Length: 102
Image (tube, rainbow, N blue to C red; front, top):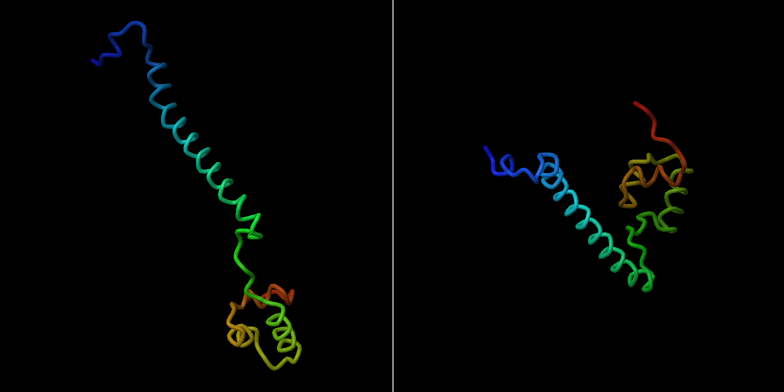
């Protein structure tokens, strides 16, 4: 028999609430700390003009070249992607053309 069972002032429900609630409270506290630290780090980055996202792989020049190559009808999307050093999805996306379903 456990010590809590013999203690009349502490109920099983209270012990269960503490045992389950404590890790939950710690997790919420940790998540709040992460959120605060992230916000504190993003604020100075925004002042410097940084967004926190990846730079686009399709520059304006690459987009023009891809459009010209695509319109010529002599290149496949895979060939255009290889030439420009980007993925096929990066070529399909700005061209507005869906990848054919096999």
